[in-house]
Amino acid sequence: MRFVTPQFIDIEPKIIGPITARQFIILVLGGGLVFICYKIFDTIIFALVSLFIVAPIILAFAFIKFNGRPFHYFLLSIIQSSRRPSLRVWRKEIIIEKEMDLKKKEAPKEEMAVRKNLPLKKLSRLSLQVDTGGKFNVEEGS
Image (cartoon, rainbow, N blue to C red):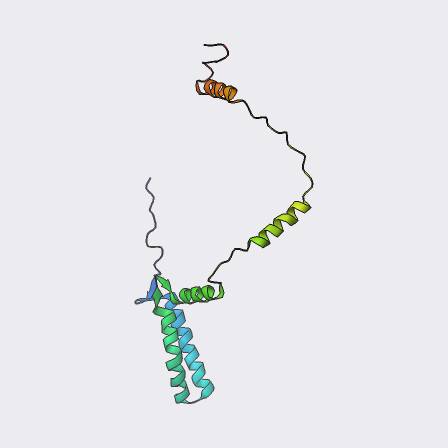
């Protein structure tokens, strides 16, 4: 059995010539906005002024891409990066205070048994026995 792998999944389908559905909707909404401005102001001069103000914005949203991403994602990235601080400061005092509060809230723990340090000779014998897989035992002399 052969399976077909979908390719070019990031390319939007064209519906009218080279215009995608997203671009078409943006252009229709922009044209409707200019038409509403014409009906509200009821003069051709204000309609032309609104056309020259709105048209570049609408065309930018419809056709301009930065790094292969639509213009509105670019604007969202600018807004998000301007709202975030550019310098991140680690405040150790706050963390230490939080840790101290947590330690106070915790119940006292039972004391763990303290391990005795093995003498160096005994430790080296044990490591030799482990390394040889138990075949060599220093105490037996084999």
